[in-house]
Length: 393
Image 1 (cartoon, rainbow, N blue to C red):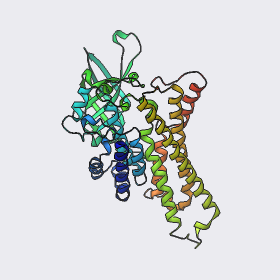
Image 2: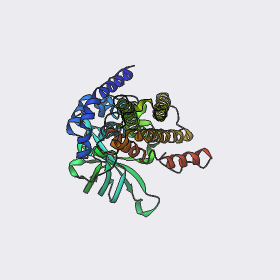
Image 3: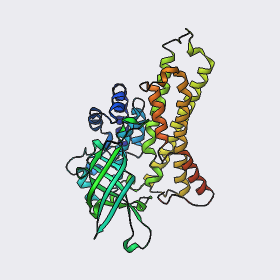
Image 4: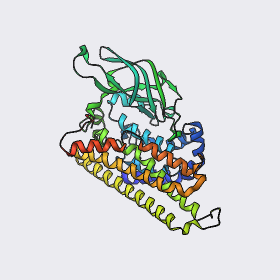
């Protein structure tokens, strides 16, 4: 009950931010980074702490709370919604780290935010006993300019050259890194998904967790934090952290188009709100978005129930989560595709809200966790008895 009340409070705060974020949306795109004022507002609202362990000042809400508030924020600015939801997700991931690492992050300040990067470029790894020395570049770290720590993917070579490499997540102090403003994207332009550059950083064992140990079993963090959150199969449910902004942007685009059509006439003087083809597009977009919302909420309910009960997440269920969330992303794309022609030439201007929503929704759907071809291939393999092609699942 307490979780439900706290989540409802976050959603209410997100709804109150809609007019403010609409005013700041162009600034976010222009600066290619979420405004500092928005970061301050999000911290005060508690968005980043949604899934953070309660032991360290977090709200420790049910999984998917980040999706629900990001869905509301996305109605105004998908970039800001992306940062708000994804930094909340990183609090969840950090909650799986050893307790000593969690204490480093939040021991002195519960409002510290954490970024991530799953895309290493030219990374070198050297073993120094049980310490890893890493250097290189990590791309696409959303919201990194608002963070103090980062969790990055590192592929550790086998000892003595025997066996396969071991993917791990390593926690690094961003004060030891260079953040390069490399983000320049057509969609989600205001997320500040910049590069983390490391000249040399020593990573002690307590700042490392094995990727293959995050498939639904006990984690180092779950031993300290008594919540199902930190035992969830990370890559099976990860797309919940990124789908919220697409749902919100599609819904916001629908609302904006309806408001526009009912408050103006075309250049010919005709009332476009009476055109049958307009009705068809509005109806199509509404049905697509409503069904996407319903599917997300249904899957989320199942995950929370299974997590609380300590039940096993079977492989076909994991693959189905990924498949259905990919389908939700497709629904959002189809919805904004149906709506864009209703804006006419104005909808081609990069500053037009409909244009921004169209670009942002398609950008969300480009994430590897939602790409339709990837999810259908994964599900087909599992469903036909060939197992998961993704060992991390």
